[in-house]
Image (cartoon, rainbow, N blue to C red; front, side, top):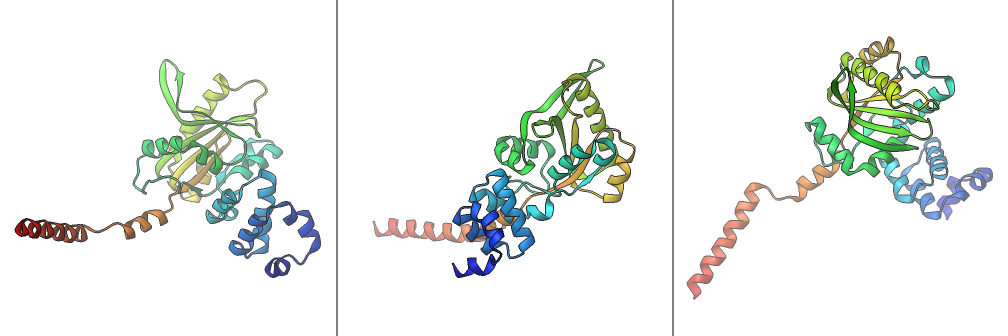
Length: 265
Protein backbone atom coordinates (compact mmCIF):
# COMPACT_ATOMS: atom_id res chain seq x y z
CA UNK A 1 0.00 0.00 0.00
CA UNK A 2 2.88 2.38 0.78
CA UNK A 3 4.42 1.79 -2.65
CA UNK A 4 1.04 2.34 -4.26
CA UNK A 5 0.58 5.68 -2.49
CA UNK A 6 4.09 6.79 -3.41
CA UNK A 7 3.75 5.81 -7.06
CA UNK A 8 0.37 7.49 -7.54
CA UNK A 9 0.53 10.78 -5.69
CA UNK A 10 -1.69 12.48 -8.28
CA UNK A 11 -5.25 11.84 -7.02
CA UNK A 12 -6.82 12.54 -10.42
CA UNK A 13 -4.73 9.82 -12.07
CA UNK A 14 -5.70 7.36 -9.34
CA UNK A 15 -9.39 8.11 -9.75
CA UNK A 16 -9.42 8.33 -13.53
CA UNK A 17 -7.16 5.44 -14.53
CA UNK A 18 -5.60 3.32 -11.82
CA UNK A 19 -8.85 2.91 -9.89
CA UNK A 20 -10.37 1.28 -12.98
CA UNK A 21 -7.90 -1.61 -12.84
CA UNK A 22 -7.98 -4.63 -10.52
CA UNK A 23 -5.45 -4.58 -7.69
CA UNK A 24 -3.38 -7.35 -9.29
CA UNK A 25 -2.87 -5.24 -12.43
CA UNK A 26 -1.53 -2.34 -10.36
CA UNK A 27 0.86 -4.58 -8.47
CA UNK A 28 2.32 -5.85 -11.77
CA UNK A 29 2.58 -2.31 -13.18
CA UNK A 30 4.41 -0.97 -10.13
CA UNK A 31 6.76 -3.96 -10.11
CA UNK A 32 7.45 -4.24 -13.86
CA UNK A 33 7.07 -0.71 -15.28
CA UNK A 34 8.98 1.97 -13.35
CA UNK A 35 8.69 4.57 -16.14
CA UNK A 36 5.55 6.67 -15.59
CA UNK A 37 4.88 7.31 -19.31
CA UNK A 38 5.12 3.64 -20.20
CA UNK A 39 3.00 2.69 -17.21
CA UNK A 40 0.24 5.08 -18.27
CA UNK A 41 0.31 3.51 -21.74
CA UNK A 42 -0.27 0.02 -20.29
CA UNK A 43 -2.94 1.31 -17.91
CA UNK A 44 -4.90 2.96 -20.73
CA UNK A 45 -4.45 -0.04 -23.03
CA UNK A 46 -5.59 -2.48 -20.34
CA UNK A 47 -8.73 -0.44 -19.70
CA UNK A 48 -9.47 0.08 -23.39
CA UNK A 49 -8.97 -3.54 -24.47
CA UNK A 50 -10.02 -5.30 -21.25
CA UNK A 51 -6.68 -7.10 -20.83
CA UNK A 52 -6.41 -9.69 -18.12
CA UNK A 53 -3.39 -9.43 -15.83
CA UNK A 54 -1.60 -12.21 -17.73
CA UNK A 55 -2.27 -10.59 -21.11
CA UNK A 56 -1.04 -7.24 -19.81
CA UNK A 57 2.08 -8.90 -18.40
CA UNK A 58 2.71 -10.59 -21.74
CA UNK A 59 2.58 -7.22 -23.52
CA UNK A 60 4.88 -5.66 -20.94
CA UNK A 61 7.43 -8.47 -21.25
CA UNK A 62 7.31 -8.24 -25.07
CA UNK A 63 7.98 -4.46 -24.87
CA UNK A 64 4.77 -3.50 -26.67
CA UNK A 65 5.25 0.18 -25.79
CA UNK A 66 8.54 0.29 -27.70
CA UNK A 67 7.20 -1.72 -30.67
CA UNK A 68 3.75 -0.23 -31.22
CA UNK A 69 3.15 2.16 -34.12
CA UNK A 70 6.51 1.40 -35.72
CA UNK A 71 7.51 -0.07 -39.07
CA UNK A 72 8.07 1.34 -42.54
CA UNK A 73 4.81 2.21 -44.31
CA UNK A 74 3.36 4.30 -47.12
CA UNK A 75 0.03 4.73 -45.32
CA UNK A 76 0.25 8.54 -45.27
CA UNK A 77 0.25 8.64 -49.09
CA UNK A 78 -2.26 5.88 -49.80
CA UNK A 79 -4.86 6.16 -47.04
CA UNK A 80 -7.06 9.02 -45.78
CA UNK A 81 -5.68 10.72 -42.67
CA UNK A 82 -7.94 8.98 -40.13
CA UNK A 83 -7.48 5.51 -41.63
CA UNK A 84 -3.73 6.10 -41.95
CA UNK A 85 -3.47 6.94 -38.25
CA UNK A 86 -5.51 3.88 -37.28
CA UNK A 87 -3.46 1.59 -39.52
CA UNK A 88 -0.15 2.96 -38.24
CA UNK A 89 -1.42 2.49 -34.69
CA UNK A 90 -1.87 -1.21 -35.37
CA UNK A 91 1.64 -1.62 -36.76
CA UNK A 92 4.48 -3.05 -34.67
CA UNK A 93 8.18 -3.48 -35.28
CA UNK A 94 9.24 -6.08 -34.59
CA UNK A 95 6.33 -8.50 -34.27
CA UNK A 96 7.04 -10.89 -31.43
CA UNK A 97 6.47 -14.61 -32.10
CA UNK A 98 7.71 -15.88 -28.76
CA UNK A 99 4.79 -18.30 -28.60
CA UNK A 100 6.34 -20.32 -31.44
CA UNK A 101 8.86 -23.08 -30.77
CA UNK A 102 10.87 -22.04 -33.84
CA UNK A 103 14.41 -20.91 -34.51
CA UNK A 104 15.84 -18.15 -36.68
CA UNK A 105 16.46 -20.59 -39.54
CA UNK A 106 12.83 -21.77 -39.70
CA UNK A 107 11.23 -21.94 -43.14
CA UNK A 108 8.33 -19.66 -44.14
CA UNK A 109 5.77 -22.48 -44.25
CA UNK A 110 6.95 -23.74 -40.85
CA UNK A 111 6.39 -20.31 -39.31
CA UNK A 112 3.04 -19.97 -41.08
CA UNK A 113 1.84 -23.33 -39.76
CA UNK A 114 2.95 -22.37 -36.27
CA UNK A 115 1.00 -19.12 -36.44
CA UNK A 116 -2.11 -21.01 -37.54
CA UNK A 117 -1.78 -23.49 -34.67
CA UNK A 118 -1.45 -20.56 -32.28
CA UNK A 119 -3.90 -18.35 -34.13
CA UNK A 120 -5.42 -16.85 -30.97
CA UNK A 121 -2.02 -15.73 -29.72
CA UNK A 122 -1.14 -14.41 -33.17
CA UNK A 123 -4.39 -12.41 -33.30
CA UNK A 124 -3.51 -10.98 -29.89
CA UNK A 125 -0.09 -9.94 -31.20
CA UNK A 126 -1.61 -8.40 -34.34
CA UNK A 127 -3.86 -6.18 -32.27
CA UNK A 128 -7.45 -5.06 -32.04
CA UNK A 129 -10.15 -6.10 -34.51
CA UNK A 130 -8.42 -8.81 -36.54
CA UNK A 131 -10.38 -11.81 -37.83
CA UNK A 132 -8.65 -14.72 -39.57
CA UNK A 133 -9.90 -15.50 -43.09
CA UNK A 134 -7.44 -18.13 -44.28
CA UNK A 135 -3.86 -19.10 -45.06
CA UNK A 136 -2.50 -19.94 -48.50
CA UNK A 137 -5.64 -18.17 -49.71
CA UNK A 138 -6.22 -19.04 -53.35
CA UNK A 139 -6.48 -16.33 -56.01
CA UNK A 140 -7.02 -17.10 -59.69
CA UNK A 141 -5.79 -14.47 -62.12
CA UNK A 142 -5.46 -14.95 -65.88
CA UNK A 143 -6.06 -18.71 -65.52
CA UNK A 144 -3.11 -18.95 -63.15
CA UNK A 145 -3.08 -19.77 -59.44
CA UNK A 146 -1.66 -17.54 -56.73
CA UNK A 147 -1.64 -18.04 -52.97
CA UNK A 148 -1.62 -15.37 -50.28
CA UNK A 149 0.29 -16.45 -47.17
CA UNK A 150 -2.27 -15.17 -44.65
CA UNK A 151 -5.49 -13.22 -45.13
CA UNK A 152 -7.28 -11.34 -42.36
CA UNK A 153 -10.12 -8.86 -42.08
CA UNK A 154 -9.88 -5.97 -39.65
CA UNK A 155 -13.24 -5.02 -38.18
CA UNK A 156 -11.93 -1.68 -36.91
CA UNK A 157 -10.48 -0.56 -40.23
CA UNK A 158 -13.19 -2.33 -42.25
CA UNK A 159 -10.73 -3.78 -44.73
CA UNK A 160 -8.87 -6.94 -45.73
CA UNK A 161 -5.38 -7.29 -44.31
CA UNK A 162 -2.84 -9.36 -46.26
CA UNK A 163 0.31 -10.71 -44.60
CA UNK A 164 3.28 -12.09 -46.49
CA UNK A 165 5.96 -13.95 -44.51
CA UNK A 166 9.61 -13.82 -45.58
CA UNK A 167 12.42 -15.61 -43.79
CA UNK A 168 15.03 -13.39 -45.43
CA UNK A 169 15.99 -9.73 -45.36
CA UNK A 170 13.47 -7.48 -47.10
CA UNK A 171 13.84 -7.24 -50.90
CA UNK A 172 12.21 -4.55 -53.09
CA UNK A 173 10.44 -7.16 -55.21
CA UNK A 174 8.42 -8.27 -52.17
CA UNK A 175 6.43 -5.02 -52.23
CA UNK A 176 5.61 -5.45 -55.92
CA UNK A 177 4.21 -8.92 -55.35
CA UNK A 178 2.12 -7.79 -52.38
CA UNK A 179 0.86 -4.81 -54.39
CA UNK A 180 -0.37 -7.29 -56.99
CA UNK A 181 -2.18 -9.36 -54.34
CA UNK A 182 -3.86 -6.26 -52.92
CA UNK A 183 -5.07 -5.21 -56.36
CA UNK A 184 -6.64 -8.64 -56.92
CA UNK A 185 -8.26 -8.75 -53.49
CA UNK A 186 -9.68 -5.24 -53.89
CA UNK A 187 -11.15 -6.31 -57.23
CA UNK A 188 -12.41 -9.78 -56.34
CA UNK A 189 -13.11 -9.80 -52.57
CA UNK A 190 -13.55 -6.22 -51.40
CA UNK A 191 -17.17 -5.18 -50.77
CA UNK A 192 -18.30 -1.76 -51.95
CA UNK A 193 -18.47 -0.60 -48.32
CA UNK A 194 -15.00 -1.94 -47.44
CA UNK A 195 -11.97 0.31 -47.21
CA UNK A 196 -8.85 -0.34 -49.35
CA UNK A 197 -7.03 -3.53 -48.41
CA UNK A 198 -3.77 -3.21 -46.49
CA UNK A 199 -0.65 -5.32 -46.83
CA UNK A 200 2.06 -6.22 -44.33
CA UNK A 201 5.39 -7.82 -45.20
CA UNK A 202 6.93 -9.60 -42.22
CA UNK A 203 10.65 -10.18 -42.76
CA UNK A 204 13.51 -11.60 -40.77
CA UNK A 205 15.24 -8.21 -41.15
CA UNK A 206 15.10 -5.07 -43.26
CA UNK A 207 17.16 -2.12 -44.39
CA UNK A 208 14.91 0.84 -43.59
CA UNK A 209 16.18 2.99 -46.48
CA UNK A 210 15.65 0.21 -49.03
CA UNK A 211 12.16 -0.48 -47.67
CA UNK A 212 11.23 3.21 -47.88
CA UNK A 213 12.38 3.45 -51.52
CA UNK A 214 10.58 0.20 -52.39
CA UNK A 215 7.27 1.58 -51.08
CA UNK A 216 7.74 5.03 -52.61
CA UNK A 217 5.97 4.30 -55.92
CA UNK A 218 3.50 1.70 -54.62
CA UNK A 219 -0.13 2.81 -54.83
CA UNK A 220 -1.51 0.27 -52.34
CA UNK A 221 -1.06 0.77 -48.57
CA UNK A 222 1.77 -1.52 -47.44
CA UNK A 223 3.85 -1.81 -44.28
CA UNK A 224 7.14 -3.59 -43.68
CA UNK A 225 8.17 -4.93 -40.27
CA UNK A 226 10.53 -7.46 -38.78
CA UNK A 227 9.53 -10.46 -36.71
CA UNK A 228 11.51 -12.05 -33.92
CA UNK A 229 11.55 -15.19 -31.82
CA UNK A 230 12.32 -15.00 -28.13
CA UNK A 231 15.24 -17.29 -27.41
CA UNK A 232 14.83 -17.25 -23.64
CA UNK A 233 12.72 -20.40 -23.51
CA UNK A 234 15.10 -22.24 -25.80
CA UNK A 235 18.09 -21.24 -23.68
CA UNK A 236 16.34 -22.30 -20.49
CA UNK A 237 15.48 -25.64 -21.99
CA UNK A 238 19.05 -26.12 -23.11
CA UNK A 239 20.22 -25.51 -19.55
CA UNK A 240 17.82 -28.08 -18.13
CA UNK A 241 18.39 -30.78 -20.76
CA UNK A 242 21.34 -33.14 -20.17
CA UNK A 243 24.25 -33.18 -22.62
CA UNK A 244 25.17 -36.25 -24.67
CA UNK A 245 28.14 -36.83 -22.38
CA UNK A 246 25.90 -36.66 -19.30
CA UNK A 247 23.43 -39.11 -20.82
CA UNK A 248 26.24 -41.53 -21.65
CA UNK A 249 27.58 -41.23 -18.09
CA UNK A 250 24.18 -41.94 -16.55
CA UNK A 251 23.60 -44.82 -18.97
CA UNK A 252 26.95 -46.36 -18.01
CA UNK A 253 26.00 -46.17 -14.33
CA UNK A 254 22.68 -47.91 -15.02
CA UNK A 255 24.44 -50.67 -16.97
CA UNK A 256 26.92 -51.17 -14.12
CA UNK A 257 24.06 -51.50 -11.63
CA UNK A 258 22.37 -54.09 -13.84
CA UNK A 259 25.62 -56.06 -14.17
CA UNK A 260 26.15 -55.97 -10.41
CA UNK A 261 22.61 -57.20 -9.85
CA UNK A 262 23.16 -60.14 -12.19
CA UNK A 263 26.41 -61.06 -10.38
CA UNK A 264 24.62 -61.07 -7.00
CA UNK A 265 22.12 -63.53 -8.37
